[in-house]
Length: 190
Length: 190
DNA sequence: CCTTGATGTATCCAGTGGATACATTTGAGC
DNA sequence: GCTCAAATGTATCCACTGGATACATCAAGG
Image 1 (cartoon, rainbow over the protein chains, first blue to last red):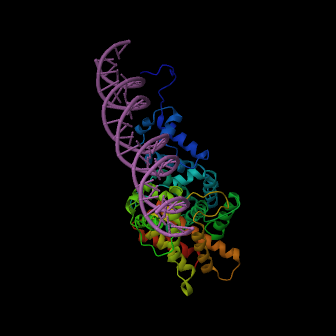
Image 2: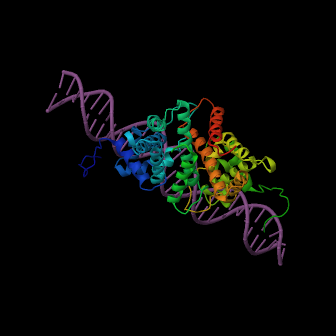
Image 3: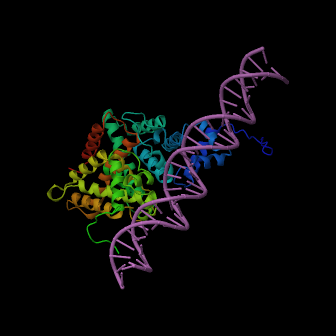
């Protein structure tokens, strides 16, 4: 039975992008979890099975959304002369606090095997690359990498402790200040 | 009336404890996720709905399991003269690497409102209490608390980055060594 | 005994991710 | 233009999940 009324661009065009955009928008709008495949498809106006042309399963969709998240995160990191260790940390932290649901999803992916590529590979590497550049003060390659991961670990860890309820505070702003203070205190950035 | 004698179970005496034990055992045995309520009930030999007498919903069960996890973690922390900042960190890290699934569940609970009690409250507070004691070197209360959370955040954060795939390595042992080195290097423990 | 509240069971339900078979578009190549 | 095969979307099914409601059964206490 052919659809009679919807003569408009019933055919979508770029379902994949639309689905990713819708999913990301949902998370940024405050929803804690990724919507169901059906909900997402309905929002775009297609049958739920249509999305499976572009994502092998729901986990693949989740990974793709995480990829978008890391791309957004990379976009928060300044370029050029503004790319400093502190600005990287600030961009990272602000992103975590601004987009908590998306942030959580980005780090909720179970790691696969040892040495396996991070799930949204390229985007994660880009973030690490930018951070490494920002932290590079001429010290050895290993020393720089260590500082990058220490700072990243500290920021991510404290944020996650707060998120999980182990660190309590009266407002997100206070948590942000607390984390930033701990990072500055650590001497990892100046 | 609650039974007071040592239970000689007719069908089952203490379903709640049995369910928690079974769930924890599953995670410690390597399964990544909490089993379904049905699977858990079947393992104990009761109908799946029986568990709902003791847990309001699956999330309540999850929280209770997390509580068991934090209790186990507390058990890894030495007592008496062996309670030092470094031994706390070591106990914590070893726990994370030894019981990754349980560890992940413990920190997967979504935080509720601001200032709300951490979900498995008492057990978490006990861990924080022990750590605070270990880190107390006579400096001010605030300084000690800051060091506790910095060290905890760093350890947890680096572990989680690895778990999520952002930090790659050839073996868990190397990751453990890496994290431990970063913590020692931070000067937060000596 | 025999009621009574606690505990466990039977059975149903809507919703989910996923599979398979079918319908519709779209765009090459003639 | 027209045809037809590949690409894309749909209809419909499935097993399974967490959860609800109604009923059965047990363990005492009067």
